[in-house]
Length: 255
Image (tube, rainbow, N blue to C red; front, top):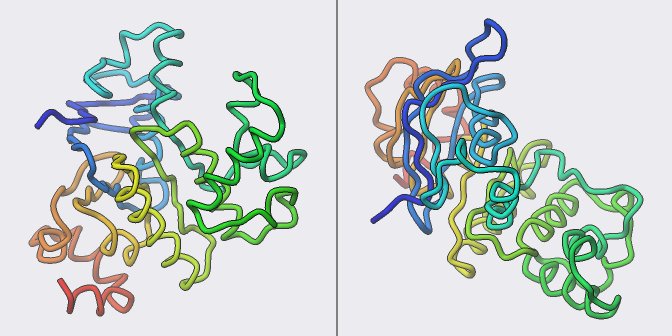
């Protein structure tokens, strides 16, 4: 099976600072692949390199078989149409209503009537568990969990083949976090898309992932299934898991 994403010896330097070093991994179609690490470990930087927001300084990044470093702006924009990106803070437009946020791409690039756009927004909102009553609300009227859901609805409104979630459970209470986890899995199952999840949430990572990459200080420590990571003999991974052992007890018992 050809990978959807392939990174080979990817590095990123900003000035004299080495942000990423020799990052290599592959993500396959239909996977939920989680990049797990602490704050400042480089996990979000990897996804920004994948979508071309950062230009890696060494190695190769291929997305759907295309070397992103060789794409001009037009073809990079075309590639990005196949990718949905959910930012950590949802990044909704405060001055726009929910329905306008969800179909923002189509507002800017399409020729649709308002009713068509509202119907389109409702279609994707319903996929994330929201309804018609949310259409005309503004982001300031939404809870943190609802904002995350609207951000996801906006990301899937272009029906992407790859969805990248940046800290989808960050700032949410445990119950809402688990609902977001269920949503990520449900959307993958319903749409057949591939997901990359950036997270420091161990419960989330070990609940939803097909495979997990553990990263520290810009370097890959281990890649494996949840069972392989939970049973790792690598000291850093063991210590990393130990710090979250209380939360992971139930996951460990079910692994």
